[in-house]
Image (cartoon, rainbow, N blue to C red; front, side, top):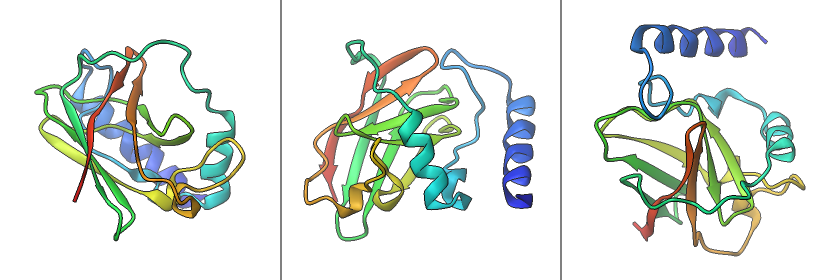
Length: 148
C-alpha cells in the first residue's frame, strides 16, 4: 500500500510540475505500473473497454517488439508529452501508462498485458500485430510493430 501511495504521489508531483499538453498529461515517461501486482493489472484490464471509435493515424509514434525479452517499446516522436493513457495490443490486451515524455519511450513487459478475462499476452502464442494508444484526447494507431 505504501508503494502505491508513493507512486501516486510521484506521478502527481511530476504532473503538477510539468503542466498540461495537447495530449493531456504529465511529461513523466512512466511505466510505474511495474510495482502493481498481477491481480491489480488483471482487474484494471477487466474494467477497461476497447474504444468503439476508429483510431487516428495522426500521432507520430512507433512500437518495437522484442519477443525474446518479452517487451514492447512505445516511442513518442513528438515534442509534446503523452499523459495518462492505455496501450492496447491486438485490440484485446491493455496496459495503463502514466505518460511518455517528448522524444522518449516507455517499455512494457508482455507479462503485464492482460485481457478482460485475466489472460496475459505473454501466455499467448500470437505475435503482436497492432499497438494502439488511447488518451483522453483520442485513440491512435502506433506505427509498426517492428521486431527487434
